[in-house]
Image 1 (cartoon, rainbow, N blue to C red):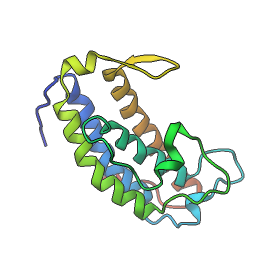
Image 2: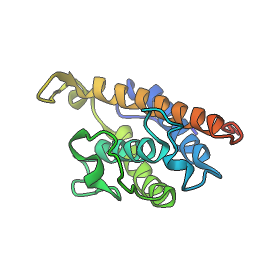
Image 3: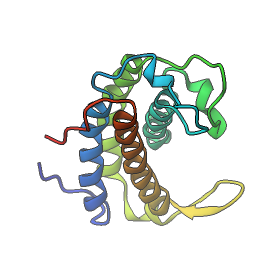
Amino acid sequence: MEVNTVSVRMQGLLSLFDLHTGFFAKALVGVSEEDMYNRLNTQANHMAWLTGSLVGQRFWMTAETNPGLKQTGFELFSEHKGIQEGVKYPTKEEYLKDWEMISPIARKALINIEDEKLDSEIDMGFMKMTYYEMISFSIYREASIIGQLALWRRLLGYPGLKYD
């Protein structure tokens, strides 16, 4: 599906965003609630945290255009919190419901963002970057997290991620 973005720079990023939108749900197909927390005796982030972190990132993408929208379990991820031991994260079904709600809103924000906004700077306290750089990093991070979820599927004995 071809869509014209306000900024030509967003065209390729929107294509990746659209791919990630479908891959995310596929990465969770069939995974048990128990396995969402299985770290295989490592310090790696489990699937429950990875999933919530990714969903939260899409909510962040809409923070200016739709303030007040919060993911299920927002407090678990606010202020860029890492994985917390012994914490019950939302279910994959809750995350998927949030993902389905926020993805069209985030997509619309990406389509409509203007070059002037993309060139403006975000001060994150510890570093500064432009909105374009932040969106680019966010899209990259989505691919990274989906890849981690796909790897967890295989490590936990599930079939590989289906891309069809």
